[in-house]
Length: 120
Image (tube, one colour):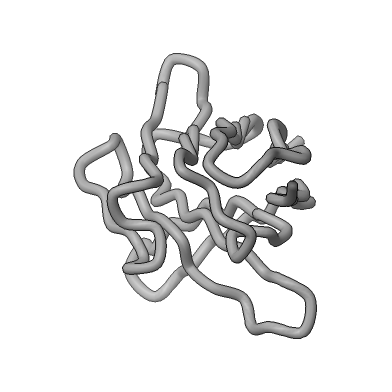
């Protein structure tokens, strides 16, 4: 059974830190590119960070560059998003997506999301 489960969200004060986890099961995790997205109320979904299959390379949205770090532990089939120096504008539901493209076939799995609230 395929599962993608996010955890680690919560309420944090501005300037604080959180680490989100995206735990996968039921598929070959290391062959998928993992992306963290976020969506705030009334706003479009935003791509936050990407790590390619087997942790080959990473990419970040300009809005989080230098503050967020994405990493993977293939032994645990888990991707992490370390978020430092959090700002109120980082408040959103953060979701994890696992995607693989083989030829013309695209396989994509989503988690249910985890709420991050940055507020004093």
